[in-house]
Image 1: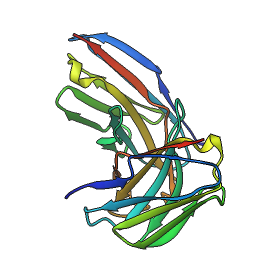
Image 2 (image 1 turned 30 degrees about the horizontal axis):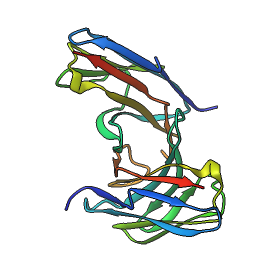
Image 3 (image 1 turned 45 degrees about the horizontal axis):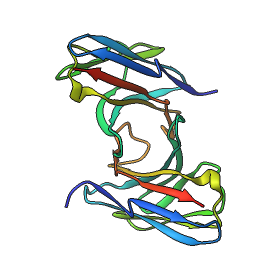
Length: 111
Length: 114
């Protein structure tokens, strides 16, 4: 069964304390993996797309990586404004018609 | 106005009411989506429209009825809903469906069923 699992469910960090969020997936025919950020009361906001194992993307304090089984979102020296829920989604299938989201990681950065 | 706009932002309705959610995108995209987001559960894809044609319907109860009159507008008609239908309903768009492209989301309609 196709599945996307994110861990941890919640993460509290001190400002400046680097860490990583995990997204593991079990799907047939991965076409793309997406990371989104969602703030309370808002819709998800696109961050990155990764297409193949070994690929990396960076944006400010965030860096996303992809292997054949999982993706990591590394956050370096986070600030309070990085507090949000981070969602992982995969698009898969021979016709790329499957879109499966994980449950998200709630990240809280304390000043 | 840019992006994806959803109205209303909040909706409270009884189980016997009929209401509609509206979504409008100003991005020139060809695919539009409805998602349901419940607390502590992953986003659930409900419907997909590509070039105004419904291409995906993921076992959604018939009390939810989508409509896509053109590539910029998407509606979700609601009738005889159940308490478990209370959730955040998100609309999204992308340039094409079945291409590995990111989706752009609206801020959702928070639906409460009494």
